[in-house]
Image 1 (cartoon, one colour):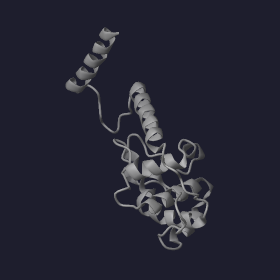
Image 2 (tube, helix red, strand yellow):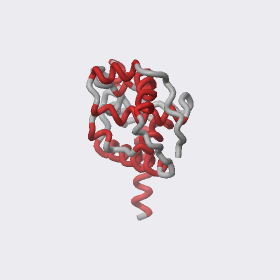
Image 3 (cartoon, one colour):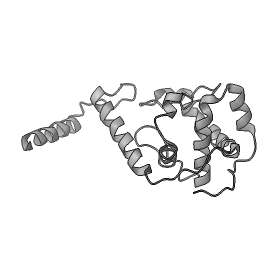
Image 4 (tube, helix red, strand yellow):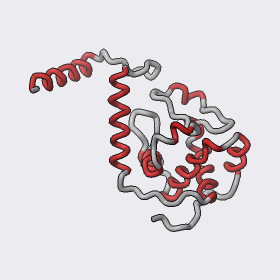
Length: 173
């Protein structure tokens, strides 16, 4: 077992020092690197969001408030109904997920999505919005994101133009 561990360390060190691994964004990761990164990311998000309690986000006021923030900060990479992601997002590796797809929505619960939006994810292009948004604004983005799969382009246009950027005053659990 010790020889195996030493071999893995030596292999890892040789990859680092030789520069043989291509970090160009235009090249996809190898299957093993992709599997390791995705697995580590999912486990980390689940662990770090485990104690987060999501408020009830069904009130449309949450959705309206989140729409403003999503349209200002998220649509460029993730797109929206009737709005494709911007040109620069096509160079992201890994690509930003299309949040309007139901199968993407199923990957994370509300607490995990909140954690991702608040903290960002290293080396993916996903910034941390916690330093620039308060807790209610972050939850509002979660509420809005959850509604994306059911929206049409006109729905998106209307809701992003509605109301103020303040979520409801209801208490957070």
